[in-house]
Length: 594
Image (cartoon, rainbow, N blue to C red; front, top):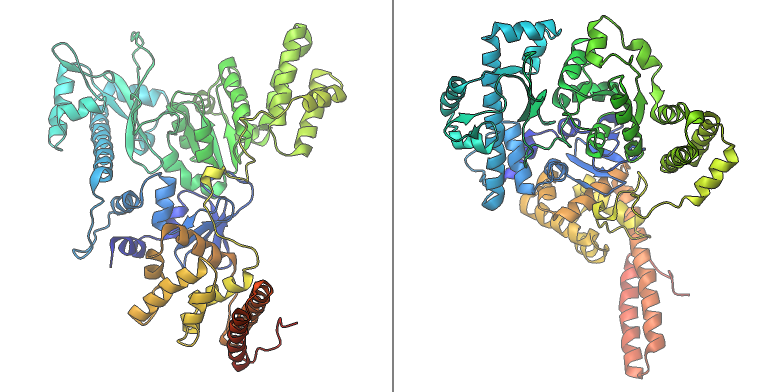
């Protein structure tokens, strides 16, 4: 057994993909929206019994390793090592395990960085429980012991002694000072080592897989004049524009409820979870990005935005309006009182339920906010606001939704609807706009051989894969020769595997296919659940023979029409008679001779 087969025999493709996408059972298969591109209809299909997946929108397909390689943007070998580490698999001695070269080095570096962050987080957690003042402050802020544990909240003490204690602790895990410096946990001063996290409450940040990858440090002493937050520096493994605090814990509930709450800060996220909303995530002190929305669209259909009730929070929501049309998410805005953030609102004993029920669809919120005090604004500002509103509405791909929002804008701005429609007609769609949500960019689409007129051949191929006994000594050579590309070459792989093993192990057969053919086979097998018995298969073969005979007759007619030499014509006719004799033996005659 090779490494890939070993991994697939120990990792369920359904369980794995459900960590990235929401799937629902549909007969033998599970279906959902594709995690690789943005779509509104469920074109992504998983076959648990075949251990394969395929998207009929972007044509991505393959097995569990292909899935990880694509979604984590890594090579097949890196994906294999990732799965071994993630599921703590122990390959038997007979299975060679070495990703080799630079890819192995990169993976080990990532693994080492995550390990450093994890040990620092656990050390800070120990320090927190040894400091009564910080514990009292956190409890006063309404953060219970359970949340401290669930989010691994910690404290980084100040002073040289604290740094020395950290260094000693890390050495016990074979982590040296220069490792901590490279990870930006500590820094070198003129004569001492220090940390920007000192005297701060530490909020460890994990990626969507639960790997520690960075920190947010918050001051808590009233006299502390430093910036309120100090975050890990961005690096290859820590990018604030693509990370969401709490996603690793929230994603399962998000999938179950199909909605997610987005807040701005760590304490807001923790308060939401503590008050019965475990499907909550937070940005890392930065504006919500398109990458954030793309990640959330893999798990949820509805996104509730809960930003602070002040003007800055409202402006952040307006910026989201310009992004949300690019993803398959229904964004709704929960409006908090102006003096509150989510944490303060909940700690006062208020319930979010009424606000959730009355949440505004983001475009309605956008128009309402834009129209606020519109009548009192100068003429040029009115023109600019109106054009910005129309420009945003034009980005929606549904003409009916556009018309509904234009009518709402006309009422809110007190402008005739015809004037807005005329302005919409003048605004051409810019060249930089992405393609429609259901059509992935050309660079993301797999080259998929799918010639028209091959339905019969595909049925024959799928029938054999589903029941290998249909491939016999009598028909195998004929089918390999006459099935069109790539079916014939793939069938040749299957024939060789069958001859070598005496039976067909689908996983082993699939493993030996080139990656592009894995995509194609995944597509064919997931397109149809049709069962073909032996009698039906014989009818399909008969149809193929007739089709081949018609093509042959047409080719001979063409050759005869171009042949000038009598000997050449006689040779062509001899070929025709030999072929006709074979067809007569198969009870196929007078097909295509007219």
